[in-house]
Amino acid sequence: MLTMLAAIAVLIILSAFFSGSETALTGASRPLMHQLEQKGNHYAQTVNKLQEGKGRLIGAILIGNNLVNILASALATSILIGKFGEAGIAYATVIMTALVVMFAEILPKTYALQNADRTALRIAPIIRPFVFILSPITFATQWVVRIALRVFGVHLHSGEDFVSKTDELRGAIELHQSGEEDDETVQHERAMLRSVLDLAKVEVGEIMVHRKTVTMINANEPAAEIVSQVLASPYTRMPLWRDQPDNVIGVIHTKEVLRAIHDNDGNFDINIEDLASEAWFIPETTPLLDQLQAFRDRHEHFALVVDEYGSLEGVVTLEDILEEIVGDIVDEHDISVPGLRPQPDGSYIVDGSFTIRDLNRQFEWNLPDEEAATIAGLILHESRRIPEVGQAFMFYGLRFDIMRRHRHQITAIRINPPQPAE
Image (cartoon, rainbow, N blue to C red):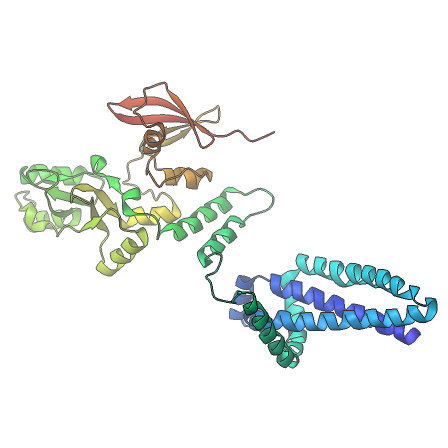
């Protein structure tokens, strides 16, 4: 009898091992294991191989787990029937259920959940030979399962994944935290990672510098006046137009102008059109990822954006796309535009041209940017009117107060963010 009790104890320990192994190996972080394998960790390599054949792994573990559980229950039933007669069946059922649930399921799985990566690395070398030995039985059971599922009209691997790999990455990014509360560094990292994934969805028209604020050079003006404008501008590249602003005939680079003046012994009497490079026009619907690749392929940093009718909408630069990822890049020549100003009462005064994406990135809000690129455009879209100064609107849990308007353009808005619940 003592021998049988010892055998039952060993079987329960084996059941706990199988249960914990299943939880640890299926819950281990695949990115972490991949990184460890790249660093030469052989245990992580074993974990990755087991996860690649997840069907065989689960099948082998379930076979082993059920085998030891049934055998332990059979031994316990035999002992208790010999001692209590037929009532021993009920006693064995209650006792073995309690033992298996507590010590062979809940306890090992709880530990494995809390230490999935560490546990997976330790048990992978032990589980792998076991999976190999049971491979014939696993293949046979999988074949039977497939046949049975086909009878009910279920075909394995016949459909697409429920979520894409990109959505999985987004979920991992949202889980990226530092302690109980996110600090500013973690928020910035999370915003950058989100922006990288959004490059293929965001169009150039959403981040371009609008033509109203683009510094452009009129080719009809005297060369000396053009040179003065070029030298006074904080930008190195400017569109050159003739007769009308939509008629862009090239792009002026400050270095080319300075080089021409130097070659002309400091004389401003130069031919500006000869110095202009060919203008590169792109549609406003171009995804940022494609435009970034185009900048790299053409070795250019500057492009002019046109709408579907060919009218000039604005300009986009390589720096504009990089700023979508890392945030604003300010150098010593940039003009400081305080587009967002925090107020003592917790609100923010925002310029109407401030982009929705920048607000979402900075405060982790979820304002939609499908219909409008700027906060003023969002208010116009949601209100279906041109609001008057002093009007207030409630959208998406935020309060928007119209502070200033120039003609039909909203120039300043006060935004009151949602107050945290006490």
